[in-house]
Length: 162
Ligand SMILES: [Zn+2]
Image (cartoon, rainbow, N blue to C red; front, side):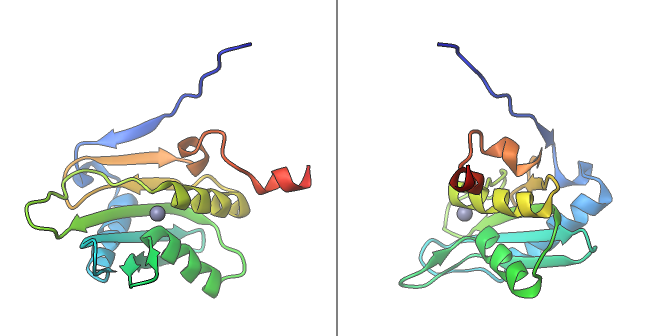
């Protein structure tokens, strides 16, 4: 038996003001997307913005109805699949606004496990590591390079064909 480890590297910025102009602009778009969220039960508004290799930026937000709860990242990928047969995401920004009374939105939000898997598969089909910007309304910002680094020992569709 051997003990193994996997290191996870990411960048931490004290605020969005430290980001480069492209990343800051994408995060601003994700902040706009939170205002279109429809989380009628959780009141936890999440926005996602993706910059593609074609230079276009697309937005999505989460929504909840009585039978479906869907994350902003999942909605964003569904939107992109509806628009493009193939696409490459260069950077995605995810942020939130918790509108429940007495809560804060000043820390980075991170994608849930399901969304990490979905983003990983988009990363593999896009053939390029996706930069993932994670933020709140204010406060520090985290940036990971490559969804694969955020999902160690991930399930892969390649398993089916080996
Ligand atoms: Zn999710």
